[in-house]
Image 1 (spheres, rainbow, N blue to C red):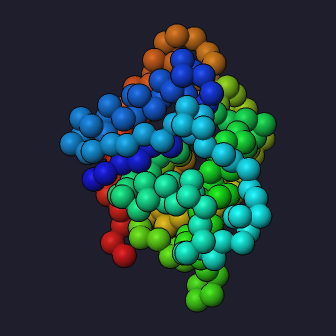
Image 2 (tube, rainbow, N blue to C red):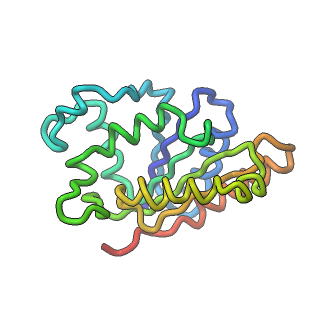
Length: 197
């Protein structure tokens, strides 16, 4: 498979970047080819604009969005990596989602509102989170994120299968962080193929 990893964190020495490095190493060990989209390092513009609104999803797509869509089109699997930020995505990743997965290219809502117009891709979210798992589970945050992202947004992406791995306690002790990086490696190593169309 060809695996696209998209990361949003401005600090190249962050735990999110270490997560990406370990995930990619696992994917390579499994024999996959890999591609990294480092949104901050590449200067992706996350601002939704009139050019995006005026796009018809096929012929008038802004050049920077088309570049990202070409990356997506090459991929058999896509992993999004970003820290949990105010119970959501940081702005660069949110802007990438808003602009790249646009109407007419990713979905059209005409035939089946649940159906992506993109080919099936194996999809994974690796999300470092400072909170402990019991804090996330007990207050319902994990279930809310699953509903919003896994069952909602990423269904339009054609991610099948798809799952979210919250890397709980990523601001914790060194042994905890090492365990999370090993988990990230395993996610790359065991990434499932896309479901048949």
